[in-house]
Image (tube, rainbow, N blue to C red; front, side):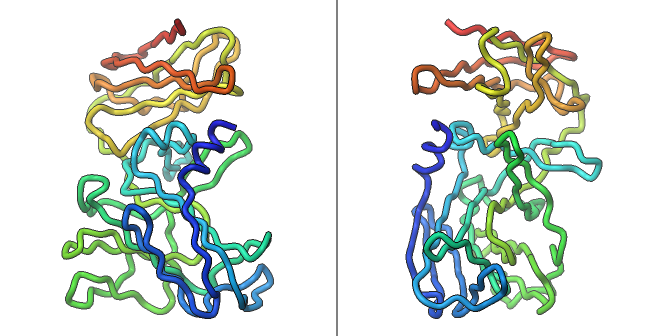
Length: 284
């Protein structure tokens, strides 16, 4: 309930005529452009009449934590690894209680200043929420990076067959992407760690487990990153992850979050990571 409420507090909406399209500008300056007659139902039939855009944008770790929207991307070998974000977005269009979808593409422009300026290493991701309610990100590969130059103003020029693409505009300091599906979309990249990594454990009080609590990692030098320890060991009552992605020697904040009497309870502990580090969380 608390997570849903935190996410609901971030929702922005706008109604528009499907035949006219929409040029939506969010409270943080993100632009969503959906063209005229570019919406269809699940059978591919054109949508006419009034529809409603639902939009969520998340740039900061506080909103990521309270809404349970951490930044974990799936690597080529299937592991979930921390991501650094240029912004994560939920975009949906409905007509009444029906979900509609794009006929072709829609376009999004994101101000890179929210996350420290343009990062040319960013790529495009789509998110899926699993049966436990956790969000994980998969890279978008179709048409990614296949732009054919630019228009002279830093705007990417794409081929007609591309289904998704990401461009970097140094003139406007924006990420410009298009994609052919609604849902969770992210401009992100993996962290770059050249040193040794380790697997850590975070023990929690006996009354807490994966059903009523979460453990996140906030790296001190990466404000656009919130990792999650998504595995819980029932016997020894600790959270961990799959193979060891935490840099040894890094100072980070371990965030334990749960609920009590309808309110958030949390504990934040600053640690400098050692090999096979075990971190104890005690609620006072």
